[in-house]
Image (cartoon, rainbow, N blue to C red; front, top):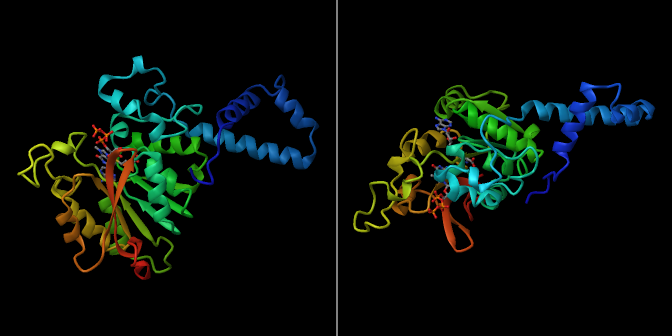
Amino acid sequence: MGKNKRKGGLGGLAQFALAAFANTASTPGVEELSTATAEESSVMQQKLEKASISQRYYATGLVPHYEDEADVPEAIQKYFSQRYRMFSLYSEPPGCLLDDEGWFSVTPELIANQIAERCRCDTILDAFCGVGGNAIAFAQTCSRVIALDTSPTRLRLARHNAEIYGVADRIEFILGDYLSFAKSLTDRPQPNQTRRVDVVFLSPPWGGPSYLGAPGGDKDDEEHPCYTLQSILPIPGEELFNVTKKMTNNIAYYLPRNTDLDEISALAPEESIEVEEEWMGSKLKALTCYFGGLAGGQEHLF
Ligand code: MGP
Ligand code: SAH
């Protein structure tokens, strides 16, 4: 895991802060505060404020946090059994949160870390942030992360999960449509470059958990049909790529493992594209395609 990960303590600290603010007269922590030096008091105060802010952004109760398999709806049991692969801090209080779409689309942590290492830069745009699997990893390798999603619920869950990892203050969460956001940046380039984006990460909806059997692609192989970029949402995958290319050449595109490789090559016929297979043990999970300066041997394009 990344170097900035904060393990443990946050939930406890938040509880302590709440108790301290709720009942100053009888809380032992506050007594300690009053007998501390000015410097110690200031440090303690900062910790309390930080914990209180974290607490404010927790989304506990918005969706269930499952710990017991018996409580998990059947449709997400397969994903629940992989919960620590998705978030190694899944059970860290107050517990990572995912909604149904989050469960089936979150990028597993080790894969997200690998992608974040490859995308190391100043400003990265996570165009489809979901419940934050990638945004949390980017916050550990990039100076600034802009995380967009059209779902207010998933954006709140992403912020909640980022708080657990101690990286929420390095992510700008924006509720909005990526296509409008991209248009606003490319139509009106900022003269002072304050919103320059170095890398865009695309992990759009693939059309639901049944993407492996989606129609299209190689009809000769009925068991494993190729996935066609036409099935990407909210617009076909090729169009999504072209919209993004107006912003930057440095694009990482997270795609189904059965994506038609000819379609990927056709996205940028004039350059090299690096296709990374994301394996977990003996299981191929997805492909990440690196374009522009992110592709090996093309660093000069960055
Ligand atoms: P999967 O094939 O649904 O899971 O998704 P798994 O465990 O390999 O199941 P199996 O039945 O094939 O054995 C594999 C990976 O793809 C997940 O870990 C997610 O990271 C990613 N993923 C799946 N979906 C449906 C989406 C999606 O719609 N969008 C994005 N961005 N990622 C997805
Ligand atoms: N990488 C994410 C998963 C992304 S799933 C993770 O690791 O958690 C795809 C997300 O795209 C969903 O949360 C969905 O709400 C969002 N989305 C769909 N259409 C969008 C749009 N037009 N603009 C921004 N986000 C969108």
